[in-house]
Image (cartoon, rainbow, N blue to C red; front, side, top):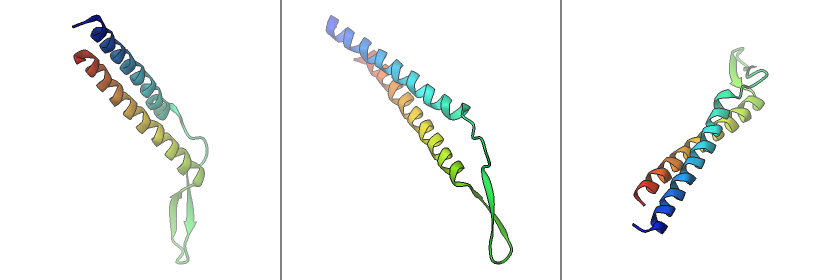
Length: 89
């Protein structure tokens, strides 16, 4: 193993750690961020039945929150794989 090989593995592992850290912040945002306001509203149909549905602001907030969670999980996975690859590089 040459010094160049060792340095590449170390840098790959360091990049993986950074990806994991950024991904963890995205997941933490998803967990900590709370919606303020009404989440659901009722819609009365012609038969007099009331259906409950998500309000528009809540639905878009929930989509944004889920996107942050998935992005975080993807970054954590890629970062972990980069760390493993750095061990065997």
